[in-house]
Length: 282
Picture 1 (cartoon, one colour):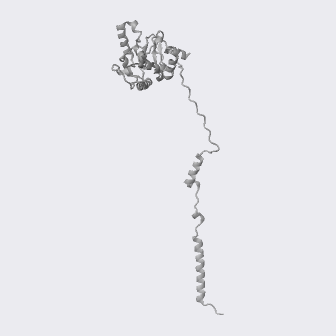
Picture 2 (picture 1 turned 120 degrees about the vertical axis):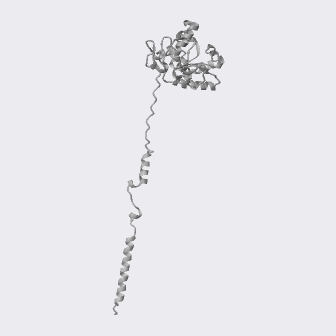
Picture 3 (picture 1 turned 90 degrees about the vertical axis):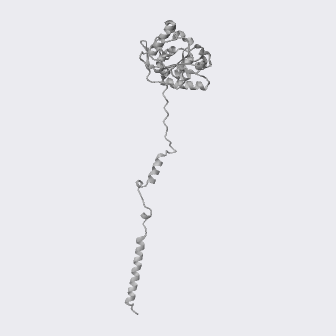
């Protein structure tokens, strides 16, 4: 048997070693599972975190959260808790229900702090403060005038706020002209005028030449005021049937703001404001 030559042995060994290296290299270059599907913690995965939050935010269909019953709004307190007057002085704490008449007076220096000029038509003779009302009354008369105009009712303001000093001049002029007894039937002494509260306004129409006359009662404008003023928070303060109680002649032009609820009550009860307040507080 021929012995393999040294050259043949070397070639065989070389081939064997190459085969082994090729196999080991193939096993080393095979990617691991971690490289193909990298794993991350929930903190590192925005997608998983977002989905988790969304799931938590959606209420379960089987057990919807019970809604708390809606709380009922407290009823409007219409009954004043303050006295009507104190030693003949009007109780300003009653706000829009303040009572001013021949027996009850305002402080001489009283002037509301919230006077504004409503955006309505006035007669030319009404200037300056005489066009002003308290904010709440001003807003209400703006709506009244707007709705009246839409209904074909032509109205204008003739006199609103009057200061104590202005009422002094006005009342003295009436006394000089007609005497005190007669003047007291249609004009208030200083401090006793509702106009000083900033809650009263005189209104007239072209049908009576914008005069303050009882003839307004017979016009469509006067009838509209009598029928609708309360829906805006105003009452026709000095009614013909109440002359004995109020001490003033009938004035279909004199509107006094007391708020919609109270004005509606006074209109439906058909009583003077004084009597309404007394019944309200009993």
